[in-house]
Image (cartoon, rainbow, N blue to C red; front, side):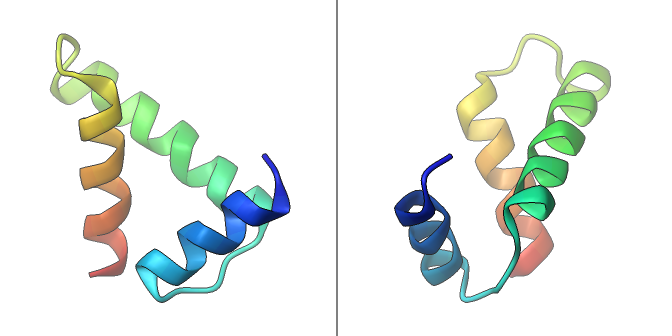
Length: 55
């Protein structure tokens, strides 16, 4: 992931996190997606999962 993408994510969520924290969030969202909604559209599921953690 590029630094600019990480900065954009931080600004959109109004939160500060490191690259490793973002990776953790993505892996957690993937595991949750597999259990809760395996057939769900994953980009939307990931976004909702990450946003719900910060908002």
